[in-house]
Image 1 (tube, helix red, strand yellow):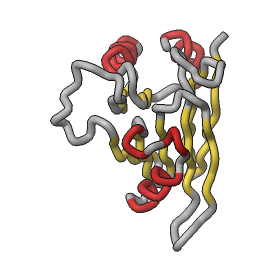
Image 2: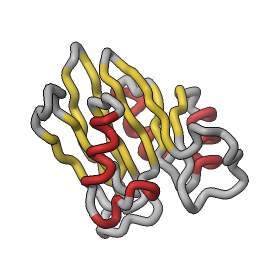
Image 3: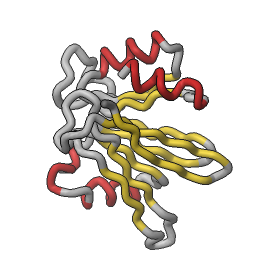
Image 4: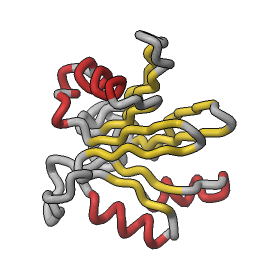
Length: 154
């Protein structure tokens, strides 16, 4: 994680979004690099305050875009993204980011029912990738434009 952040600091990295399974460690790394931290816990996290209603999901807003972050286990994402996508649309999200599968994913749903595009993104996993590539995600929001991409570790 430190290597991935170090590779991107010169590119103007503003903050870190963490999608679960290793919350405490991720928070420590963000603090070490003095990055804003936006995180949710995963189903494999321990020592977390589960009374916090935002522990598994949060709605954020950046550059007029609503970003729903969740670990994803409560939305059966290992069986597809349909449930999560419908939930994200019901919450008015422009972007939904999730973890849990440890598999990279990036797709865009077209406008529907009077709502705009929905960007759906899973950065994969640096530690335990289920698709064989250690990956992280990058999200750039500028002037209403969304750019999501994956970076890879050796």
